[in-house]
Image 1 (tube, helix red, strand yellow):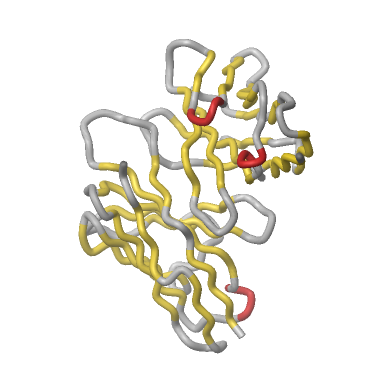
Image 2 (image 1 turned 90 degrees about the horizontal axis):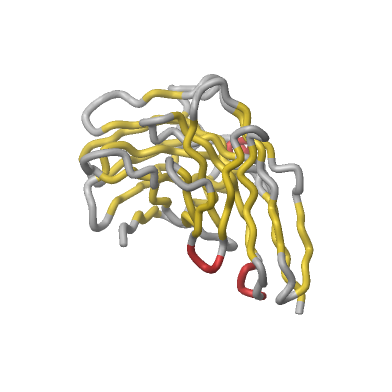
Length: 113
Length: 118
């Protein structure tokens, strides 16, 4: 079975500071990896995904993530955050060639002025 | 972009009544739709997977008779919470994968429907 761990439930940060949201996964088979963002009272929006190829993946809104197979991690980073980045961020995995997503518990990013 | 719409976005009902939530893909055909449940400040829990014209596949622990899912067309799936009770109060979110050749790895999510059972 697959599982996703997001160790940080909340990450407070000041505007223009860098941020890293951590994600680790567990799976006995190869998986695809995703980061989704959820703004208040809204559905989820895809930030970025890793299917294959380069382990450094760039997404929307200046976010990027790096797939590290040996550490089974897929941490999300942004060099300089904005107030508008305040939201809930979910890491997710799916098995190859399936659309069934398993989500982590989410990390609340709170950006302060 | 691909848009998924849920209706209603917010519903309050009395205990014992049934509530239907619709999930529509507005500008694309969805091969598969998924239904999730999200508790406050928690992650999304996959409830079931539905494919057009076939029975939904429910995750372990999800009551099939409680949460009825119908996928009548490639653009519409419905979730009916039957005989709702206060513990069914939650945020329900649907997602859809687009009918396309090859795996794209992207799901499109609805805005969610907040159910409150009194």
